[in-house]
Length: 166
Image (cartoon, rainbow, N blue to C red):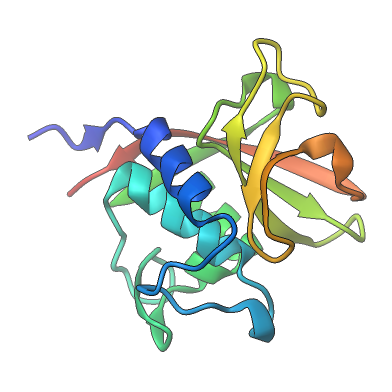
């Protein structure tokens, strides 16, 4: 059996667009306890990949509010998981804006040191720029919001390459 599968970018985008201004009742809303942005992005990535990593602590999974991996709801933990994952679940590489596609992840740092906000790319121009990279997000709910309308000190781009399945 092939251990890699294609990440369905359109399914991730469709999910993000469907839930950008509301909440899927299958998942807890973390808005009042630190923010819902990475939880929302994780849901969209899962919609596009369909494979969780059930490794305790260092995996990427959600069963309920009390049984979830840190990477499901923390921007920094999601980054570490996606860029180092060698087992089940999505895999990403950090890149620059020119390499991103719809379904990829943008993370923002407001202080220049800590990345704390995750967003999902729902549309991007033929040549991606901060003006034509459009995002969906929770914690400041948005859909089709251009990257250049956010105020931030630093930004990083995560291109999802594939999904591992075991």
